[in-house]
Image (cartoon, rainbow, N blue to C red):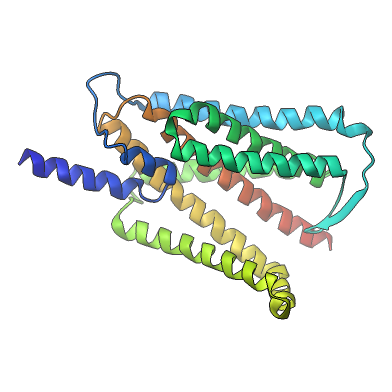
Length: 283
């Protein structure tokens, strides 16, 4: 009977972690409990705040560079991005690309080498802060308030989803995960097909016109926000399983990074939505 119960608990844990790669790696370790210090909600919350503060540090780094090293550079690159006129320098763009690549590497290390998460997760969060600061203070110059508005909306989404989860209104059931992963898979498929279509000369114009259509682009961004919000439910369920099954305290870092990753994802997509709406109104 004891073995059957343990098998059922293990199956349940795997089902909750399946949607988030960070959480999924925790289950694959095979550690389901500890007689030492166990993971706690307070520890996960503190570490999540730590990662978000690293994001703020990344934002501050960009502002310092923008007001010192970048200030004296010639703004020789002028492009229109979603209705906003962006003026920047080749060095700024080069560093931004480098930061983006570095962020991807740190994200992968945090997922596949959990022991490094305290460092790699912090560095990933900082790269996201750098990217956000570039968008808010360079791309949206004169419209910086959109960054604050995106923050307010993101906080509201997190609070609403947490209430829906804690009250049992939405649970990470098998049906819920099926819907969530179907939507996520659809978005990935659309992105891949769009990329392939854009590479083919015969379909490039057609794909460009479709993706460039305001309402289609807006709809895809809204869908991304919905998917990211649903991932929050999965993250909450995973965190609950970590704590309630007394997994070792070291897993607090992975759980916190998974939650911070989703929150940052929501913020960036909400900011993108606001950019599209305001940029279209400017036209």
